[in-house]
Length: 275
Image (tube, one colour):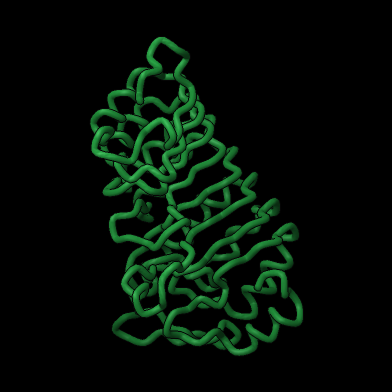
């Protein structure tokens, strides 16, 4: 099926790569290496491509505008970050597979890799898990003064410092319209627990949410399957600073924790569209 050599190779989709034993990662990677003119690479439903293909993409992404590798497996965070650094034309970056249950081998970006300089500052869609350092998370309402218990105080401070750095990098993409950090739950909650993100951005003012004030074009936010807890100040901040936000999924999706007091009522009374 990969038989278009001799043509201008600017676009490849999952339709060009059968999801079978006949087209595996090495073959697709070799095909990617035949062009430096790729503008669209869409492997959303193609589970047979993986780390070799993504590494090849990182070496041939000078003109890349659209990338969807959400269904790839065992792709390192470092290689994903290389693409973000080396793709100056990139507008769409999708490394989340939102059409099925989360998997432990799904792509993700680690916070440590994520702090390098962007290749493009024109991203309109960014869909990826971002893993931050573990901390002893406290689910006190943001309205209250947060109390951090010793000896975990240092872990909390370190985690939130790294989160703030990640938020600052995201804020540089002030053309963003779609920010997906979480995956839709497609199994019962009991089965999905093990795929739930716990080492994720907390999306609270205390963790640096206010760094995202420049994302005023944001229209879609997906936080499903993330271990977070947004309080009233965070919601009110979103209304003030994201005037175009029409879709906000997962605000109440806190797994075993109850939403902060008043959040459900506030959403029902003020932003029912976000529910």
